[in-house]
Length: 488
Ligand code: NAP
Ligand code: MG
Image 1: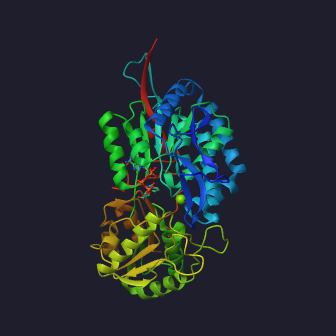
Image 2: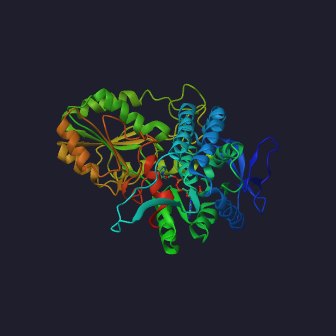
């Protein structure tokens, strides 16, 4: 591919240096709002490049782990300050590369800053317990030890927050990192890494190698010097990561898809439920793992809820994310657009009734982007593909039920279990939902897509490896417990 002179190339970051891939090959990252706009070029790397990065990380870890945890935290504070100073620029890159609105991109980048500060602070907190020994002269306690080199494999939907919520705890607890970002959003990832570079982290502590999942991702899975792998992405790739890591005895953590329900009961505040369903289901063009995709409504309020919802959905302004009028941007890639359209077709074929949307956006300004209309189906039941598989697009499936028991049964009738919401003013229904909903994140009178960085995050069932990220839970993956017995 010929590189356009005015467009920047973002190369790998290995041992504190920016380095072209060993073949010098690059590929274009394009703007999903206008496929003719190249956001930047990124390196297509080889196994050899990955080997260099892993060797650098392995070497750097010897000195990094010897620093005190608060000293490592200081570097994260510095990285937070750099990212904060570059917030608008990084967010603009994210919008151009991935399509979400500038407002959402700024929110995500600000979250990245907050995550760095949070884990910098975690570096000052206790990491172990004193346990009484049966030997009265001995002292027994637990300590934490880093894994070593951590491979970080991330998706394109949160190109700043996800790399940071994995890298920050990895680093503060004494690991070094090799990041393989999603190819779709590798320019944004490079900017995150620039912030670590500008913060002055020692050479080799953070490294980034861009390239295909099948070469660099698979290379991380197989690499004997990578001690732990943290992955967020699709179910299919997650399985490969888990199986590959298990086979060679590496630690692994997987966060995958969702098929998240919202339950709207007859005693709910319907206006609030409508707002939250739209926000949870359609923001970021439905491309959040916690996005609402199934709306399970009690029959007595079904018609009123549906009319209120449709009235609001019709007002949604679709457009390019940098336009301040836009509420919903394009799908992040052509492949994603085609996936969404094929699920919509499947919905129609299987007998769901299309109430609104369902097509590519037509007309002025939409020709060159991957735009799809916000889409609402009704008459959906649990046997249908659109009620079972993750669509990762702006598609809501309305499902009618009579009772709360039936609502919970339908809500749980999927293989995923990431997040779920209920709208109700009835304490009994809230309690049933808290107790019986099979999801890692359950929210009452709030949208399914809200995640707070200081709380554990992760799914049940097929949504995760059942480990948790973020908050204080992150220490469980990024360290191993060492039980220490001391006798004088
Ligand atoms: P994906 O295709 O699984 O890709 C995720 C990452 O894995 C990318 O960096 C990808 O690289 C890499 N990869 C691809 N093939 C690989 C292989 N054979 N071996 C190792 N790595 C490989 O997922 P995506 O399409 O980027 O993201 C969407 C998915 O992520 C959705 O299913 C969504 O639910 C999930 N997600 C989950 C969470 C959560 O926390 N639960 C959060 C966000 C997203 P390339 O980009 O180069 O292909
Ligand atoms: Mg792109």
